Amino acid sequence: MAHFVIMGCGRVGVALAHTLDSAGHSVAVIDQNPEAFRRLSDEFSGSKVTGLGFDKDTLEQAKIDEAYAFAAVSSGDNSNILATRVARETYHVPHVVARIYDPGRAEIYQRLGIPTVAAVRWSTDQVLRRILPDYSMRGDFREPSGRLVLTEVALHREWYGRLVKDLEAAAGVRVAYLTRFGEGTIPESRTRLQGGDLIHVMMHLDRSQEVEKILASAPKPAPAD
Image (cartoon, rainbow, N blue to C red):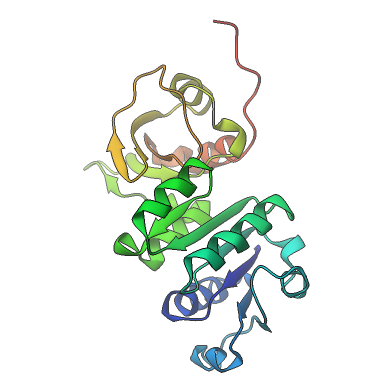
C-alpha cells in the first residue's frame, strides 16, 4: 500500500480519491475550498487538507514527503503545473501527473518531462495509469490465448535518454508503440526515449510484475556501441 496526494476535489479528484482509498491506499486530498470536501463520501478514510496545492506547508500537511504519487487535477492549468513541479523537484515524488486543459501547454510540459493529460482526452482511468503503475498492467489488449498483453508501462525517469533496444533487452518486452506529444508512433530499435513519452509494450502476462519492477528502477549502465 502507498500514500497518494491529490490536488483538487472536483469530479476527477473525488473519483481518484475513492478508487485509491477503496483499494486500501493512504490518500490525502488538497483543495483551497473546504466546501469541496463535501463531495467525498462518508466512507472516505483519507485526510482532507485545506490550502493551495503548491504551498509547501499545505503539501507537508498532506505528507507529500511520504507520497508515492501526486496528481494535480484542479481546474487551473497554472496551479496544476506549479504544484506538480514542486512535488517532483522539491519533494522528489516518483510519480506525478498534471491535468491540463490547453493541449498546446500539455505538449510543452511533456517536453519538460512532466506527464500531462489534456482535458479532451481526460479520464480517471488515464490518470491512474500514470500514478499507479500496476494499474496499467491490466492491459489494453490481450491476444486470444491470454498469454500476451499489450499495455502501457511506467518508467523510472532515468530510462529517458536510453534507446528502445536497451529497454527491450533489459525487460524482455517488445515496444509496440510510444505516444509522444499526443501522437502515436512506431519506434525503431535505436529510437531514443524522451521525457513525457508514454511507452506501450507487448509482453507475457505472467511476467508483468517482473517487468514492472525492472522498469520502475534505474537502468543499468548502457553497453558500449
